[in-house]
Structures are given as structure tokens and as C-alpha cells.
Image 1 (tube, rainbow, N blue to C red):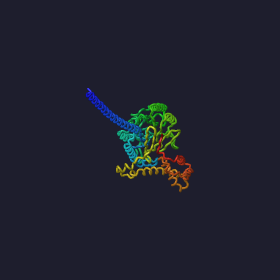
Image 2 (cartoon, rainbow, N blue to C red):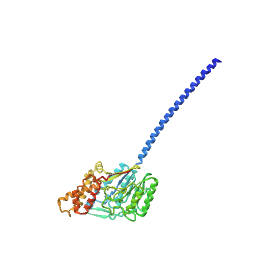
Image 3 (spheres, one colour):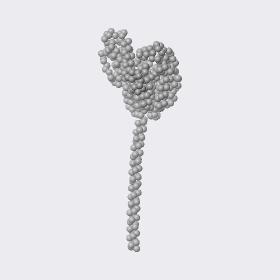
Image 4 (cartoon, rainbow, N blue to C red):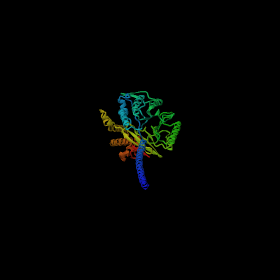
Amino acid sequence: MGEKGGLYKIQAGFLVVSLFLIILLLFGQRLRRDEAAGQKTMQETEQEAETVTKAEAEEEICLMVASDLHYISPELTDHGHYFTAMIESADGKTMEYCEEVLDVFTVTVLQNKPDAVVLTGDLTFNGAKKSHEDLVKKLFAIEEAGIPVLVLSGNHDLNSRNAANFVGDSYERVEGITEEEFMELYGSFGFEEAYARDKASGSYIWECSPKLRLLLLDVNGGEVYNSVSDETLRWMEEELQDAKEAGAAVIAFSHQNLLRHSMFTDGYIIKNAAHVLRLYKEYGVIANFSGHLHIQHIEQKDGFTEVTTSSLQIAPTQYADITWDGEKLEYQTASVDVADWARKQNVASNNLKSFDEYAKKFFCQTAYWQAYETLIYCLEDETLLEPLIRYYMEQNYAYFSGRLDLIEQEEDLLKEWRNLGVRTSVYLDSIAREERVSQNHLVIE
């Protein structure tokens, strides 16, 4: 029995050791599985973090805005004497090449792929139905690429008495369009898919994302021109309240202005702009982006900001990019690169191949004759004629392009203009009071 008892003890000892080793082995495997699981969790966490970062980046909304396209169908002008003389005595729009400018803008939109394109009125040169129809065809090219186009009418677009076909030394009246026809023709460009529409005007809300809505305010249709009706004001307040409750920020657009940007106010500032501004301030609208004046200008009053984007058809033929990341809005202008497009298309026209130079020269030529026709009747000292014309050309171009920061004031020539006491003197004096900063970039936080 003693020998057997010893054997049993040895066997039991081996059994205990074996069980201990098995437990260690199983524990080691479990530990490795836990470590692996921990590594997987870290990887998943990193992936989730990357996903969140990407989602946040995707929240940035990118818009392109252009104003005052003043497009005319190529079928409505032969670029004859009457048409040429008319544009040469106007404000410097490059109407000779409006087709090409718009085509290059379209190409730029397709390359940039913004979340939406906003066109703030004066879509056509003189409101001719044919111009509207041809413009719609161009805009469909953008829509078909999956980029929404949002339009507003301008004072040149509806019920126009100036819609014309220009031939040789004359012109003939052609058909324009009514407000109802405008809504139908441009239905695909904001109206039909709007988040909300106003029954009393062509105003509407566009939802870019759950966190950002655009309010496009129309004052060219409706019962009273250039004024916001009481019904529309009530609609605006309801929509602004709805956006506030949804936690959505609002950016506003219009053709006419809410703030004073220049000495020209009659017909430019919305008649009851004060009521609109009250609503925008009360509900925290970020800013308003307008056009109409053809100048590039930023104005801020009582904590509210409005930007007028210069005409796409006037040098430096620019549009603007607007980005919103949920906290910060940034606005930056850029010129359409017609010259680059012309070279790639092997276009023969030297004007198109050096378009920036041509557009500026054409703008300054129209300014030259504006100043000349003023001075020739009131200037006694002929030696001042060219210096005063040059001063007007340079100040006028810098003002329109929003780059007064690039030129000197030249007080002596301004004084000579003041002494003449003509309307152009008042205009130049108003420019002289402007701050000498770029009007092409803005950040709102």
C-alpha cells in the first residue's frame, strides 16, 4: 500500500501540473485574443474618426455666384453699327463677346463643381424672349452635370419694352416675357425644387443642406416693382423662423441692394429695404449678396453685411466663390479665363486670346468718352484735358473692379474735377471717400 500511495501522489502531481499548464495556455490565447480585439477596436476608432472628419469636411458648402450676365442671343444682333455704337457709349460691358464669356463661365462651373450656382438677376441684355430661351439651354448644361442653378430675375428681364433685334443701323422690337413666363421658362433653376416658394413674388428658399438655406428675394415681379410686399415679408418671417427652429443658417440673395453702396440709390436700393434688414438682423441672416450696380463692393452697416458682385460682362469679368463651413463664410472673386479658353479652342480672335487686356481697354475707352464729352464743354485749360480724363478712367475702373487699393488718389486732379462742379465731379468725390481696400474678399465668422 505504501508503494501504491506514493504512485498515486506522483500521478496526482503530474495531473495538477498538466492542468496548470493547460490553464496557462488557455489564458495566453485569451490574452492574445483580447489584445487583437483591442487593436481592432483602435483601428475601428481611427476609421470612425476619419469618417467623422470627412463628414465634417463634406459639410462645407461651396457656391458660385454671378450677377448681371446681360446675355443677348446671337440671333438678335449682327454687331452692326447701331449695336456697336450703343455698347461703346454704355458702361463698358463686353457685349461683343458675351457669348464667349458665358461659355467660359459655364466651363468654369463644370470644372469647380460647386454645390450650387446662384445668378442674381439681369440675366439678359434687354429681356428678349429669344435671349432667355437661349440662356436656358446653356444653363441646362450645368444642371445636367448635377449642379443646381438658382436664378433671380433682374430689372432687365421682365416685361421689357426694350427687347430688340439689332440689325445694321437700326433695330426692331421683339417679344419679351412676363413674370409667369419667366417662372415657367426657368422652372428647373430653383423654382420647381425649392424648399419653399412665396405666392406673392418670385422669391424662394433653397435648402443646400439641413444646416444651410438660401433665401432668394425677388422684387422685380409682384405688384410693386422694387419693393417687398407685406405678404412676402410675412412669408419671409415664417421661413426665417422655420430655419431658426431647424438650426439652419441662412444666406440671402437679391438683385437690387439693401444697403447704400454708391451715390446712385434711386432704383438701386429696395424701397422698403429697412423692413427686410430688420428681419435679417432679427433672425441672424449671415449676409446678403446682390448685384445691379455692376460694381464690386462690400458694405457693412449696424452689424449687417451686403456684397454687390460686379457684372460678369464688365472687366475684370468676375464671379465669386462663397464657402460656408458651419461657422465661417468666405467670399472671394475670380475672373473667368477667356484667354486660356480661346487658346485651347484655337480661336483666331486676338481680342479673345488676350481678353483681360481687351476687356479693361474697352471699359476704359467707354470711360474716356464719358469724361471727354463732359470736359469738352466746361474745361477752360486744355492742358488739363488728358490728365483729367486719365484720372477719371483709372478711378472709375478701380471702383468698378473693387480695387481702389491699387491706385493713388492724386488730390490735385481731384481738386480740378471738383472745381468744375459737374455731376462727374460728385461721382469722383464719392469714390474719393471710399476706403482704399480690396472689395474682393470677405470673411464672416
